[in-house]
Amino acid sequence: MSWGPGWQWVDSCSWQDSWSLVSGPTGSEVEYEVECYAKCAFAEFRPKVKYWVGANATLLEVNLTVVSDSSFAGMAWTLQIPIERFAGKTIYAIKADGSLVPLKLREQHVPGQASLFSTDNAVGWLIPATNETGLVIAVASDLWPQGIMISVDDEREWAGGTYALRNWLSQQFQLPANQRLRFLVYFTPYSGDPQPAVQKAVEVSQALAKGSTLDEVKAAVIGELGVEEARAARVSPTALYAPYAVLAAAAVAAVAVVYTFMRRRTRSS
Image (cartoon, rainbow, N blue to C red; front, side, top):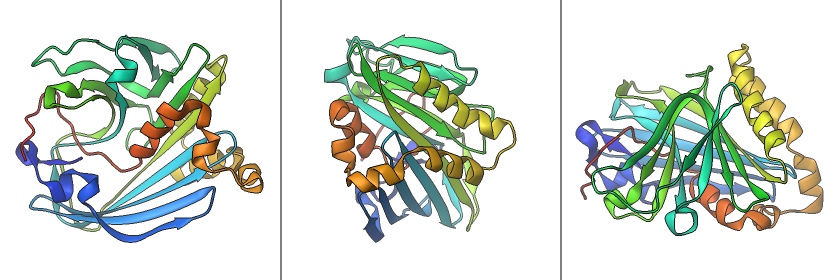
C-alpha cells in the first residue's frame, strides 16, 4: 500500500497487487526473488524482494529503487493479521532493549479511533498463535539502527478485516531518482518459551546499533537460518511453517513493501 502527499490513494502505486511484474518469481525451495514496478502521479519505483527460508527461520530482504523523483506521506513495512482470529488476543511489541510491551487487541471497532498502539525504539513483534506457539518478527533498517517506531491500526476503520502491525521506516519525505531504500525482515516461529526467539530478533537489531552494516547483518543471519538443512530436506515455506499456518499466511501476504504513515487517514479510490 502507498499513499502520496495528502494521503491520496492511486491503485498503480498504492496497492501491491496492481504493481507490474518485471522479473521472477525465481528461486528454489529455500530462496525466492521477484522484482516489480510501480508508477503513478506521486512516485515511480522498483521493489525487489528476496527471501531465504531456513530450517530455523526466514529472512526477507527488500530493496526499493526510486526510478524518478518521488514523494510519499510515509513508509512502513506492515503485517496484517486477521481480526477474526486475533480479536481480544494479546500480542507484544519487542523493544530494542529486549523488553516486551503487551497489547490486547480491541475486539470492538470504535469509529474514528483506528490507532490502537504505538511505541518507538522497537524491534518488532511477538505474536502468539496458541498458548505454546507463535511467531517473532524483527525489522532492521540502517536508517534507524537504535530501533524503529511501530504501531497497530484497526483496519475496520476503512472496511478492512485485519489489524495492521506497522514498522515505520520514515515520515513525510521525498526521494530523488536512483535513491535506494533497503531493509530486512526476520521471521522465526517458536514453540514453548518464546524468549530465545525474542533474543535473536533483538540481536539482529542490536548488531546495527553496534556498527555492523546491513550486509554484515544479512550474512550473519543467513548463516544461522539453516538454509542448507532446509534445502537438503526440500522443505517448502508452507511445510516449514505448517504448525503456524495462520501467521505464515499473513507473513507471506506481507512480503511486499507497504507504504503509509498515517494515524488517521481517509482512503479514496
